[in-house]
Image (cartoon, rainbow, N blue to C red; front, side):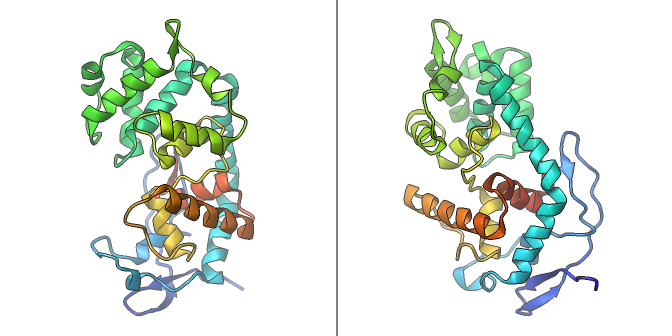
Length: 275
């Protein structure tokens, strides 16, 4: 029997068949899923709709869970390959490689990852990431929001992790055996890093696959899946950790590892597997 994938139509208040979409041109350096088969969950809401708690769809249904599980099966090998790349950064990368990932995560709040990573690459090619002043770094942060503040954060972090004239970020990170404790230290000690950015950094260097990275794409889909009731107006530490616990529970229920679940939801929303 052929299965018809459904989505929740807010206007009609019922499940409707998914609409086939045209295949987008793949972007260099990422994996693109077949949008002729699947549609991002958030597309059942129009982009100009202002959401209130009453606007959200019904609680999680077996159909939605099955859709995520099926999508994970399709993307599993690509996700595992990407996570292997991240683990290799820790196992084989230099302190400069680690610091580049840290700088990337400092830049990403309220900015597109696809904008931030090329900025880091430009800074690295010109060696400004490692020796440049805040003003010199600022010149390369085109299209990055709050770039003045973030440029100063990068310089501050570089000074913080420099010992005897060289970067030694690995020495600090190796002092922790628990990723949750390491995340807490990063939040408390590195300017520009909150729980999301710290978890993102640790995941990207192969140390934080069990941590939630609660950006807007993930939160939106957690609402649509019924894992949380609404997108919080602000993410306090208490609220962040509560949502993380719920996401871990959903991960166990669906048998999708946390590191995979983040990428499943992110790629389902954006159409790519990136960073």
